[in-house]
Length: 198
Length: 169
View 1 (spheres, each protein chain N blue to C red):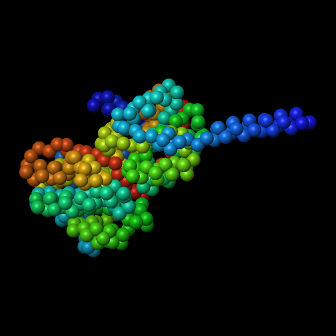
View 2 (tube, chains in turn purple, brown):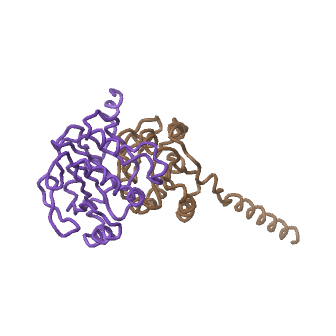
View 3 (cartoon, one colour):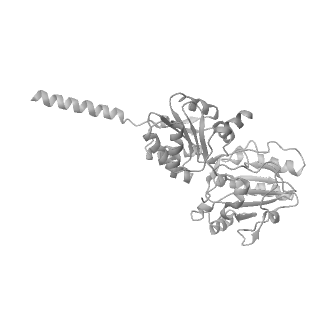
C-alpha cells in the first residue's frame, strides 16, 4: 500500500481525468437533484430509493458492454425490488447526446428493452462527477441510510450470463438485505468511458 | 552495353527483391497476440533500458479509442527507435477479426496484443488505479518508471507532450 502511495506521489496524473470515486460508507451525493426519467416524470435519488436502499447504475445506449450486461438488469431489479431496494439507471453521456444518447434515444431504448425501472438523464454528468464514476456500466449500491455499500461491476462475465462465476452485485444486494458482511465491496470491469463534455 | 544493361537489370531486381522483403506484411498471428494478465509486466519490462513504452488499451467498439488511435500510430512513426507503442485490444473474442482488420487499416505493422483472461486481473495488472474505462493510456520511461497515465481519450498534442516528457526527463 505504501508503495502504491509512493507511486502516486510521482506519477503524473493529468488534471481532471481520473477522479476520486465515492468511498464505501460515504453518503450518496446530490440526492435531491431532479432528473428527467424516460416516463417523462422528474425523479431524484431520494425519491427512487426504497426503504432498504438504492441501486444506481450509470448506463447508456451506446456501449457494447452495457448491451452485454443489459439482459441482467431485470433480474437485478427483481432481486432489489423484492428486498425493498430501489433501482435507477442514469445516463451521463453528455458528449454523446447527438450520437445515440439523447433523451429520445433513452426513451426508445427503455421501450425496446422493456425497462421496468427508472432511466433518467444525468445532465452534464453532474451525478457521475459527484460519484467519480468513470465508465458504463458502473454500479453503486446504497444502504437504507444511503451510505455506499458496494460499487463496481455487475458480475465477472459481461459476455455471458450463463458463464458468470461471481455474481458480485446480486451477492451484495442479498448480503445487504440480510445484514451480512459482504465481500468484495468493490470490484472492477472494463467498460466504456463516460462521454463527458470538457 | 549488354553488360551495363545486365548490371542495371540485376541491380533493379535485387532492389525490388529487397523492397519486397521489407514490405513483407506482418502475419495475423504476430500482429495480434494473446496477452494474459500475468504477462503484462514482462511485455512492458522487455523494453527496460531501451525504449519508452506507451501502453494504449483500445477496442473496435470504443468510439474515442478509434478516434485517438491514429495519433498514437503517428507517435510510433515519429520515434521509431526511442518509443514502443504497445496496443492492447480489449475486444470481445468474437471480434478478433474486426480488431485485426482495424489494425491493418491503420497501418500498424508491429506486434500488438489481445486481452485474455478476467477483466479485474487485467485491469489491476495493467495499473491498479485504473477504473477499467476505455481508452486507457500508461507511459513508462526507459528506466521502468510510469511517468503518466490517464483514462478517456486524448488528442495528439497531449500524447506527444507526455511522450516527450518521458523521453526527455
